[in-house]
Image 1: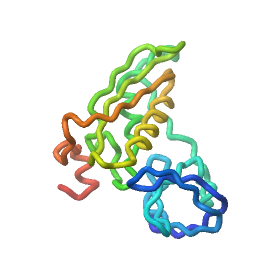
Image 2: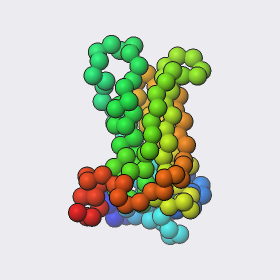
Image 3: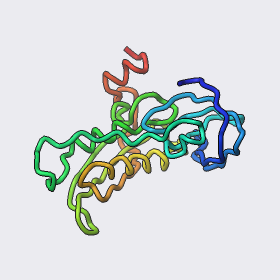
Image 4: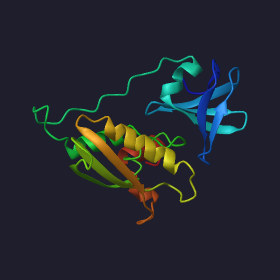
Length: 185
């Protein structure tokens, strides 16, 4: 599907890359799909790269896809709290829109703590992550996507993703799998 030209069938919201600025793309506009990962579309527009949510796939003439289910916990009790590995698995469905590697394999997620929800039933995840560059305007969009994916895990009702800068990210933090995708090994 990459580099496929599409005409927008309706107006849709997008986020400019790398500034993070929200824009509205008009119907009839032409875009080129650059990558489809984690349920969102990175497209080239007449004014640069933008990210379109999977919820707006129909504007591209694509079917809106249901989110990929997060693998179940090893326990069989449906009322049991989620396991930390489920959160990490969910975060593997979050992508920087310019890089075809998920945020976990990029080494952007530094910490994940689970606990009871502060408001009502369920569980809460507090995640600390960084970005590949401090000036990246996509940070809030990536953090919001991460929170959404975490809340998709059965039993999760709250998620907070904080962007931190210590330690500074570097390429040594990329997993072996991520390095293979990027052609670094």
